[in-house]
Image (cartoon, rainbow, N blue to C red; front, side, top):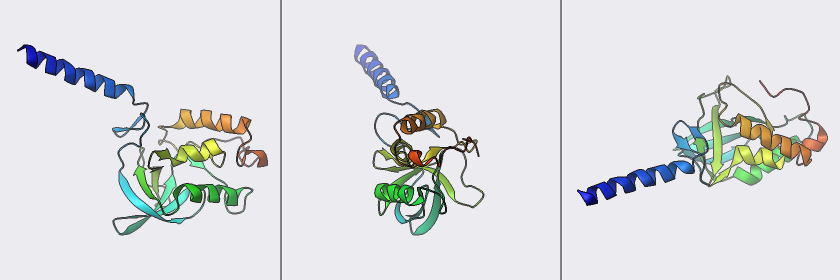
Length: 174
């Protein structure tokens, strides 16, 4: 009886400790603790379209993937090439883990995902480096507050595209 109680207490203790590392949960996937959450899909990046869109081969099928929660300059805008190159440096040819927030696809049938290369959270990293702005595409808002704080910090430090003023349109919602 005593050994069973000790084992039970150990299980509860370990379960409680595991929960301490979790900062945010997306569909039951932990994003805290220094590692990527469990992926909804895993594939290899076969093409980088721009700063926030990639083509990913998942089991022989290529999907266009739009990063959730961020926006980068468009082809005809200042800093487009820099943002695209920053994205390439992070993901080109890499195996990526794709994590869904709420929505499956956008109006263009692109998968909407948070993207990870190993433990690197690409959506977040693009904001930190200043190549992406935070944008709320409801209902996908799991990282909204974190991303907004990171963008403010990046803007204050004049990182990446911020000195061009490209992100100063006054809107963070789409």
